[in-house]
Length: 267
Image 1 (cartoon, rainbow, N blue to C red):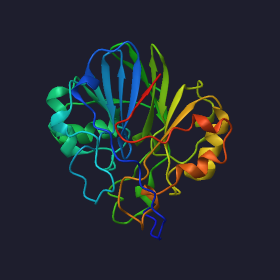
Image 2: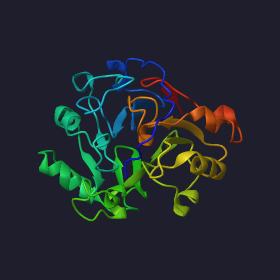
Image 3: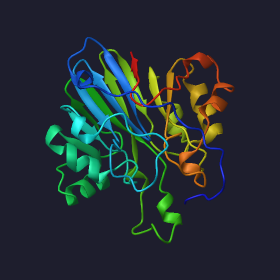
Image 4: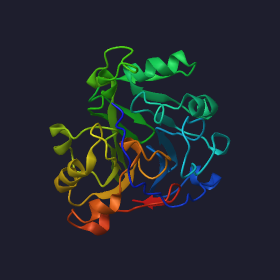
């Protein structure tokens, strides 16, 4: 359910342009925040995007994406966590589909992609599949906010319609929990090396207290906050949060990397 209020918007750093070289071979694994809730991983030349929103959003932005669909290089896969249009961008997916080896997500998301003319593979929560040398696992998420909204409850949304992605690479593990309220299952994952942390004040997202608890469970994980500081929506909790508030509450606070969209973090 959308939460209307007035929030002190925090703006993300200005984006760093992602160049064509970022899609090429490399000897390690780099993680890029794409702005909003998206990310790109290049693991030794295997390039994967998660929830890319590069064009076509229906709300004003504080920070633009660090590249356009036309500037996107060859991708081994695009992974989509859920159906919200700031994560499943049909405009972006249509424009990059010829550059992408496969689109993957929960079964419901895969069905929506197919309806949009984009071939996609659907998976259950807990399923594993490989993208090159990267092992991808769907992790549970709790984000069925549409069931509380008369406008958006076009069907009964199930928990398995939403997911996170846990990626095991040759250089370490990367976990994007996705948009989700904190779940007990999320506190008992194999310890990731990097967490792409959905950071939002909304009660259908992890929120500050949930983020503190999650970070306590994985005290050595590098933290890259996403889903903040990009959308000009002072009345919507979903797009607002201040990651510096998290820094004050966690052990090893230097592991929190408040990064610009397009800035690489190397494992």
